[in-house]
Length: 316
Image (cartoon, rainbow, N blue to C red):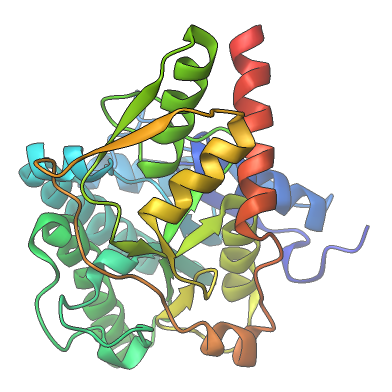
């Protein structure tokens, strides 16, 4: 196995034990058998605190940072806990970029979010529009906290010549996703609902909203590949969109989830529930042109793998 950029590196992956992080760590080891990975766990390193961040860099000796750790939930969590969404994500990101600069790391990438884009941004979202307005209200605390890290990175480049990249991610899904009904995003939440209704013989499920809003769903392993491609590139990509490049309505998503789970009942739409921004799709031409990255897994294949994983986990 050739290691390329990663050979001999020590990479700090915050959130490396989580959904996206676990896939990224696997991908990293597939790219090199001579890479060390350090995952700071929250019970030992509270990354919202400067002292913990300094200790994490000192303990790891990391020369690359990939920052994935986040406080993020589905639309219900965004509505219920906006203060936590803003504070946790802003503090972790700001502390970690400053810690990386002080530690003299060679490369750093922060995982951002398409929720950072302005509410009125044209679809597909292009990176040049990131600061053209305030984000959609429900997701704004999380989106603005992440967007602030783009401003921090630009300032650090101008003053200290410290380069870092910012990968703007769309709605991720895949094996190991969060299926907790209190915090799950739209894909795992509805996979769980469909399977439970199927197994119980229930005639219908209830989905949030009208089904009309659209999202750009990106399979988790494609996101992991993209983040590593951006991190290893000689040209700093600040920021760069990583998405599927396709737009799927929530109603169409539910039809595909029902197909993959074998649920044959009806979907009742609870329009009193929040449903977030109206449309979402990102322009992925920068990732393709500068880093040679393209998504490899379409929604049908990704949902199938996710359903299969969830059913295996449930049967244990």
